[in-house]
Length: 130
Image (cartoon, rainbow, N blue to C red; front, side):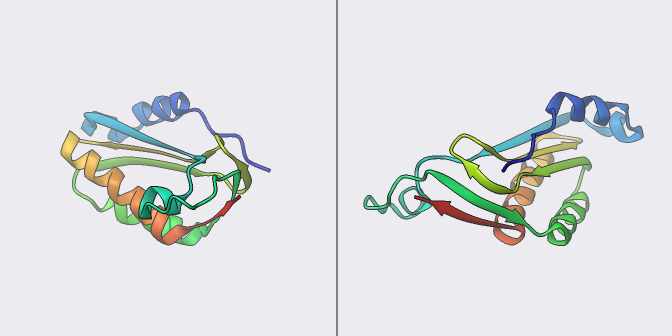
Protein backbone atom coordinates (compact mmCIF):
# COMPACT_ATOMS: atom_id res chain seq x y z
CA UNK A 1 0.00 0.00 0.00
CA UNK A 2 1.53 3.30 -1.01
CA UNK A 3 0.67 6.85 -0.03
CA UNK A 4 -0.46 9.56 -2.42
CA UNK A 5 2.39 11.85 -3.43
CA UNK A 6 1.81 15.54 -2.73
CA UNK A 7 1.77 18.15 -5.47
CA UNK A 8 5.10 19.84 -6.24
CA UNK A 9 3.04 22.77 -7.54
CA UNK A 10 1.40 23.15 -4.11
CA UNK A 11 4.80 23.00 -2.43
CA UNK A 12 6.15 25.70 -4.76
CA UNK A 13 3.15 27.96 -4.07
CA UNK A 14 3.69 27.44 -0.33
CA UNK A 15 7.42 28.17 -0.63
CA UNK A 16 6.87 31.36 -2.62
CA UNK A 17 4.40 32.63 -0.02
CA UNK A 18 6.88 32.31 2.87
CA UNK A 19 8.84 35.21 4.30
CA UNK A 20 12.12 33.65 3.14
CA UNK A 21 10.98 33.58 -0.52
CA UNK A 22 12.75 36.86 -1.32
CA UNK A 23 16.10 35.17 -0.55
CA UNK A 24 15.46 32.25 -2.93
CA UNK A 25 16.70 32.33 -6.51
CA UNK A 26 16.28 28.64 -7.33
CA UNK A 27 14.13 25.64 -6.42
CA UNK A 28 15.29 22.14 -7.25
CA UNK A 29 13.30 18.94 -6.86
CA UNK A 30 14.01 15.22 -6.78
CA UNK A 31 11.43 12.51 -7.51
CA UNK A 32 12.70 9.01 -6.74
CA UNK A 33 10.81 6.12 -8.34
CA UNK A 34 10.95 2.32 -7.98
CA UNK A 35 12.89 1.03 -11.00
CA UNK A 36 12.91 -2.45 -12.54
CA UNK A 37 16.69 -2.69 -12.76
CA UNK A 38 18.10 -4.17 -9.53
CA UNK A 39 20.62 -2.28 -7.40
CA UNK A 40 23.16 -5.12 -7.88
CA UNK A 41 23.08 -4.54 -11.65
CA UNK A 42 23.10 -0.74 -11.54
CA UNK A 43 25.69 -0.32 -8.78
CA UNK A 44 27.88 -3.44 -9.06
CA UNK A 45 27.29 -4.55 -12.65
CA UNK A 46 25.90 -7.97 -11.60
CA UNK A 47 24.27 -9.16 -14.83
CA UNK A 48 22.82 -12.20 -13.01
CA UNK A 49 20.61 -10.04 -10.77
CA UNK A 50 16.88 -10.57 -11.34
CA UNK A 51 14.62 -7.69 -12.34
CA UNK A 52 12.82 -5.90 -9.53
CA UNK A 53 9.05 -6.40 -9.30
CA UNK A 54 8.53 -4.13 -6.31
CA UNK A 55 10.01 -2.82 -3.09
CA UNK A 56 9.35 -2.82 0.64
CA UNK A 57 10.06 0.72 1.78
CA UNK A 58 10.07 2.35 5.21
CA UNK A 59 11.83 5.20 6.97
CA UNK A 60 12.79 6.56 10.37
CA UNK A 61 11.03 9.90 10.96
CA UNK A 62 13.53 11.11 13.59
CA UNK A 63 16.49 10.46 11.29
CA UNK A 64 14.66 12.18 8.43
CA UNK A 65 13.98 15.23 10.59
CA UNK A 66 17.66 15.33 11.59
CA UNK A 67 18.78 15.14 7.94
CA UNK A 68 16.42 17.99 7.01
CA UNK A 69 17.65 20.10 9.94
CA UNK A 70 21.26 19.51 8.87
CA UNK A 71 20.44 20.52 5.29
CA UNK A 72 18.96 23.80 6.55
CA UNK A 73 22.39 24.54 8.06
CA UNK A 74 24.00 24.51 4.61
CA UNK A 75 24.90 27.87 3.10
CA UNK A 76 22.10 29.63 1.25
CA UNK A 77 19.29 27.11 1.94
CA UNK A 78 15.93 28.60 2.96
CA UNK A 79 13.24 26.07 2.10
CA UNK A 80 13.00 22.26 2.29
CA UNK A 81 10.07 19.88 1.92
CA UNK A 82 10.38 16.09 1.84
CA UNK A 83 7.76 13.39 1.38
CA UNK A 84 8.57 9.68 1.63
CA UNK A 85 6.31 6.82 0.66
CA UNK A 86 6.08 3.61 2.68
CA UNK A 87 4.88 0.06 2.41
CA UNK A 88 4.95 -2.35 -0.51
CA UNK A 89 5.59 -0.41 -3.70
CA UNK A 90 5.47 -1.47 -7.35
CA UNK A 91 7.80 -0.58 -10.21
CA UNK A 92 6.98 2.97 -11.23
CA UNK A 93 5.65 4.00 -7.80
CA UNK A 94 7.03 7.16 -6.25
CA UNK A 95 9.49 6.63 -3.40
CA UNK A 96 10.47 10.18 -2.54
CA UNK A 97 9.78 13.79 -3.37
CA UNK A 98 12.15 16.50 -2.18
CA UNK A 99 12.14 20.22 -2.88
CA UNK A 100 14.91 22.60 -1.87
CA UNK A 101 15.00 26.36 -2.30
CA UNK A 102 18.12 28.44 -1.93
CA UNK A 103 19.96 31.53 -3.01
CA UNK A 104 22.17 30.30 -5.88
CA UNK A 105 22.44 27.20 -8.06
CA UNK A 106 25.66 25.75 -6.59
CA UNK A 107 24.23 25.90 -3.06
CA UNK A 108 20.91 24.35 -4.06
CA UNK A 109 22.46 21.56 -6.16
CA UNK A 110 24.89 20.68 -3.36
CA UNK A 111 22.12 20.74 -0.75
CA UNK A 112 19.85 18.46 -2.77
CA UNK A 113 22.67 15.98 -3.32
CA UNK A 114 23.55 16.13 0.39
CA UNK A 115 19.96 15.67 1.58
CA UNK A 116 19.01 12.86 -0.82
CA UNK A 117 22.27 11.08 0.02
CA UNK A 118 21.59 11.28 3.76
CA UNK A 119 18.02 10.11 3.30
CA UNK A 120 19.05 7.13 1.17
CA UNK A 121 22.02 6.19 3.38
CA UNK A 122 20.70 6.89 6.87
CA UNK A 123 16.92 7.24 6.97
CA UNK A 124 15.29 4.62 4.77
CA UNK A 125 15.04 0.87 4.48
CA UNK A 126 14.60 -0.53 0.99
CA UNK A 127 14.14 -4.21 0.19
CA UNK A 128 13.89 -5.03 -3.49
CA UNK A 129 11.37 -7.71 -4.42
CA UNK A 130 12.09 -10.09 -7.31
